[in-house]
Structure formats: C-alpha cells, structure tokens
Figure 1 (cartoon, rainbow, N blue to C red):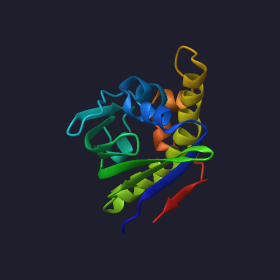
Figure 2: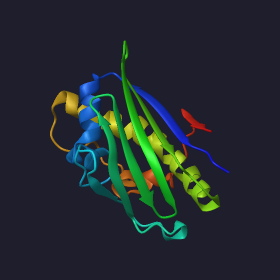
Figure 3: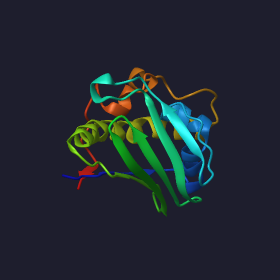
Length: 172
C-alpha cells in the first residue's frame, strides 16, 4: 500500500519571495518548524517539533538537501519516526503569482500510511495559512513572526492534531 501527499497552493507574490521563504532557516523557523536549513545540495539539517510518541516520533525530522534549482525546484530527504520519504517543492510563476506544489513520497508500510494520513491533514493548514501569513508579513516589511498559532508553535499543526482540513489534498 502506497500513497503520496500532494498539495498545490497559489500565492499572490513573485517566485523569488516564495523561494526565499522556503530556503531561509529563519523563514522556515517562523512559518514551519525550527530548523538549521541551508540551501546547499548535500546539507543535512533537522526540523524540531513536539514528540508524538504514539507514532514513535521523537520530535526530530532528519533531512538532507538532494536537489536545488533556484527558484524553481528543491528536493529534500525527510526521515522521522516511522517514515523515510522525499519532499519536492516546485514553484511556477503564473498570472496570479506563484504556484507552489509540495509533494511528499515514499510512505511505505502500514505505520507510514498512518503518518501520511496525519501529515496530510496538517500541510494544507501550514501551506494555506502559515506560509501566506509569513509572505504577507514579509511583503509589508513588518517585524516579527506571523501571528501566533498555538498548533504551529508546538509543532503539532504539521501532524494535523487539532484540525484536519481537506481542501487541495490529493492522495495517490
């Protein structure tokens, strides 16, 4: 049994602004999870979230930058808990702004499918609310992170623990 997570969002900002939000450690820490990311192929980095022991997740996502084609495409390995997957970000400039597609593949096994189901509930919230809030704040030049969201602050919004939005998610 195998399925992917595939989320597409369009933001009313140029691709370079969206790319900057995806490739800056400070930006990722503000809208996604705390990290030590660097935009360099081969760089190993981690994201830190609250542990989710029921899934064997210690709160650390171990990643590596596998591909980097600014400002169009970036691929990471993503391993944590019971998953060892690959995440691909693809950006496309459109008349409306920038279309971002985030695809996570490699959910092998029953435990990984449970994790995929949980993650698929969190990504639309993060990419549909947290990232646009960050991009809007960056566009206006205001200081500080986007408005606090307790779910994101403790890392559980990624796991979709509180709300399970369903728009714009495709399982394959």
